Image: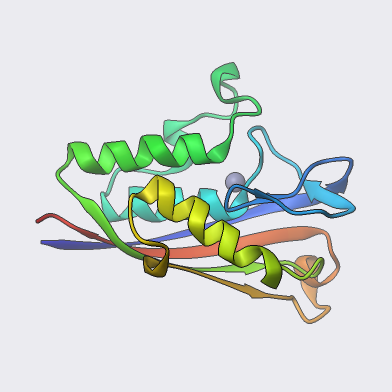
Length: 158
Ligand SMILES: [Zn+2]
């Protein structure tokens, strides 16, 4: 039994905030605004798993008006989502994802993101793909005003 899910997330970029992607702190003059650590990549992966389970979305599970989730590490939210999948008898097979960010370049941070996500997803790092693109100077991403992420996940119930 297989289930597939898709996730998408956007955060506004602003000075004076940390930029966390896939659980990795990326040195940057701008970071992502948000209630938790505003980790767009991890949020997209959470939503992809919840989507595969037909279990709603991250905003329903972790409301941003709930002080419990203020400044929480998004990897902890992902761990809860993985637990939810397990409760339904599912495990992650693989994840593919894309982060769109104008700068800084993410290439050197991707191995660490894959390792961090894989650890929480309880899969090998070679089952977690993270790709990075820029916005080619267009729209909010290209203007350096936003970071977005997309993820697709395959779940299996053995
Ligand atoms: Zn988010």
